[in-house]
Length: 425
Image (cartoon, rainbow, N blue to C red; front, side):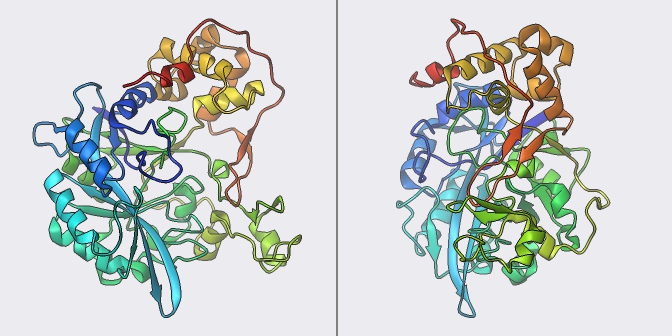
């Protein structure tokens, strides 16, 4: 049974998130995307946890939950920001927490509340606790509570971040490395980049959206695909831990160039640089003469001990896709956020073929051309085949897919996703 899971999102209680990030709305749009399992996000926040407890019921002792209103199953997840010092150097690492029950969540929250104000943000800042201490605290509560480093190469807040990270999992987690079995790649990296670093071979690579809004162009833009009969919390993590290629089939990735921190640069100076150019400039912005934000590609090159293109034995494969909304928007040249024309076309295609991920991965080109413009159909196939080109992202600026030409869509009378979003769930 094929299962698609996006296990890392945020709630409306996190900074810079949509007020629509409630369980029922998330469940409805997860269905539209084609997701079977969605992380709840932010179970450390008291109000969100209250919402979760009132909305979700466990599914037959599986460690997964349902709101009984959608087909989407939920897993109890959260993310925390650890800020501490090592030998006088500030370290800032985001870690995800996974738990199989509300009882375990309550115990985790009780202990974490000693290190920070859990009510301040859906992704709370915890101080005076290191990654090893944090991991030991969580796993001491339950052997089935898991820690996975989030968006592992992002410059500012990650295990390998150029601004405040470490050079290896072992350096970060020390004696608790034994309890770390996976890392999350993040939007600006993909498994192929991680395969250049031999020390990561022992860890599974997972991918999640880190969505801050519930729309299908955010949910599931990165995800994990499993083949598991009667899925449970423990079956999913067993497949990840064991890198079981019969059960953990592949991850869904955006092209790393699409991510906001792929290349080095300065947003304010409109400067974007490849790693080789950054080296020539000694990491200094050629305009403002301040230090550049060193991106993920440079960071991977610093840590790499293998050539580009190396594939480790038993590596879990991946597929590279671009969200359908993004494809339609850029092909048509209608780049306004939440354009009615784009959402109408987006909805028309999905209504014909069931889910967005089915459209992106499976529907034949000739069938797509019966429903949408030839240029959109061609772009979907290019995305599926990993043939899209990008202007790479840098210093908080998303990358931009590059398409030749554009066309003007005809207005339809169909209600768009933007209108659907206004409904109360």
